[in-house]
Image (cartoon, rainbow, N blue to C red; front, side, top):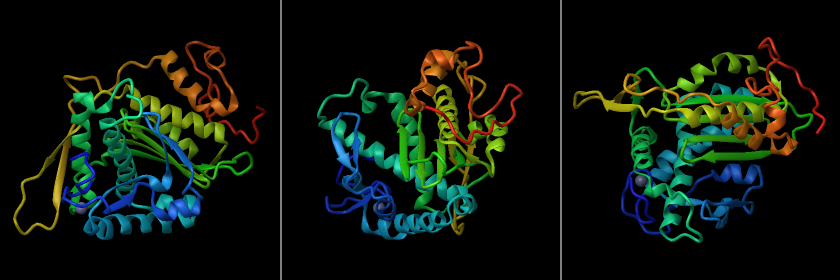
Amino acid sequence: MQFTDENCFLCGTTITKEHRTPVFGEWMQDKYNLRNKELLMLDKSVTTFDQLTIPCCDQCHLNHVLPLESEIEDAAKTEYDGICTLDQKRIFQWIGKMYYGMLVTELIKEKDPLIMPENPVSENPQMLGKFKTFYQVLQSLRVPMKFSDFLPCSVFILQVAPTEDDLPFEYQDELTTMCFSIKLGPVVIVCKLLDNGIIRNVLNRLYKLTEDRELHPIQVAEFKARVFYAAYIFNVVPDYFIRPGKPEDEQLILDSLIDDITNEVFNPFEPLAYAHMLEEMLKPWSIREKDILENPQKPISFLTDDNGEFKTIKQFAK
Ligand SMILES: [Zn+2]
């Protein structure tokens, strides 16, 4: 794992500066007209989607990155149904690549920042440990690898109703909590990396309620807030081990352990902190913290009613 312009992001081979791969696949940039769209980085510099590339050797680009992108592109043609049939390991690798691409870009920028960020990621030793662990499972994109009985992330796939949806594409990431969401037309994928599916289990009941339903964008925003907040209070980092194998084995088998004895898996839920997260996600609707916490113990919900059943929202008056 090296954050330089001279090493392939995936295999580490030394390369020259011309060998790069886009963080966001070319097909996606074309389909959603992203090439010249601007992105604000942590050091306040501005870049565009097509400038956002990471060092990648030809071998990794041709054999590992492009096939993955074309698999996702194919699936995205049939929107929700297509994305749902993808192997979740491929979704992990795809989101993992974009996440890592953003991370590498931010870390390279931190070496020579426009404006020094308040909490530079590269100066946080705990974060670096977490990234190294993540890098191990990201290698599954290149090295044949089977995850024994886990997926190294939580994936949620949501479907947005067209009525009040005016965003063809959207993406959001939170580098420190390793949370990522991306909207491709009517499909939103939300992912927390490196939790071994724990958040997926915790939010299982809510997630089941959304299955095969078209959600109003405000409901998607709340769902994202729930996942991003859960990632924020998630308190453990899994350990991954390569199972000892024989020389003739065709793939590595990875086992995983989470230490939930010396560490609580989640820090306590704090309604106020959650309300801030939700307020951030609800910005387009100008719903403020005081509305969210009208009942201080029970933050407002657009997904479920008082009985915990799914709430149908067709239109929402701003
Ligand atoms: Zn490579």
